[in-house]
Length: 263
Image (tube, rainbow, N blue to C red; front, side, top):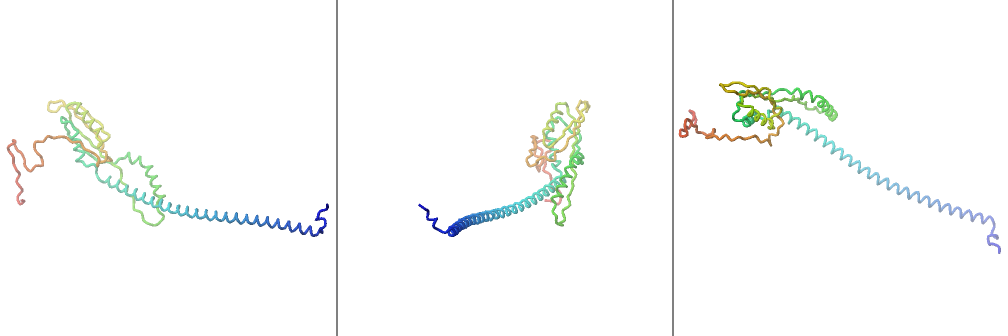
C-alpha cells in the first residue's frame, strides 16, 4: 500500500521539514541560552559571595594590622621603660654596702679577723667589648622601626656597665677557718668570682697566723626582694639600742641625761 506522503507535494514536504528543523534549532538555542544565563547567574552569585568574603578578609587584615601596630608601639614603649629602668638601676648602687658588710661578717668564722675592706666601682671593659655587635644590631633595628613623622625622639642615654670589686685582707688561725670562709662566700648569691690571691704565714704577737687576701665581685643582678640574708645569733646581754647603758657590772646601770635645752 502506498504511503500518504507520496500524495503530498514535494514543496510542502520541504517546508514542513524546514519548519521542524527550525523548531528543533530554536528549542536547542533556548535550552543553550537558558543554560548560559543560569551559569552566568550562578557565577555572578558566586562572584558576589567571593567579593563579600574578600571584603570581610580585608577588614580582618586591616584590624590585624592595627593591632600589630598597637602591639609594636607597646613593645617599643616596654623596651623604653626597661631601658630607663636599667639606667636607673645602674645609676643606683645595689645592693647597699650595709648588706654587703653584714653578709661578710655573718659568714665569717668567729676566730677569723678582717684587717681591711675595700669596695670599688669600676667600668666593665669586658662587657663593653662584648656588647658592641649587639648594640649595633639593636640600633639598626630601632632605625628600621622608627616612625616616619617628624616627631623628635628622646635621645638615648648610654650608661657604661660597671662592676663592683671587693678586696678583703684578714688573718685566720688555721687554713680550716679560711677554707670555711671561702666556701661560704662562694655559696652566697651576693658575691661572684671569689678568688684567693694571697695566703701566707705571718707572726702576730708571737702567734702564727694565716694572712690572706680575697678578691670578689658583687652580683648586681641578684633579686633583693627574694634574697634572704644569713642571720647570726649574737647572744647580747643587753640591747645596744636601749636608752640605758651599762658600765662595770650588771647592777651598775646609768641612764644618759638629755642634752641641755631639750626635754
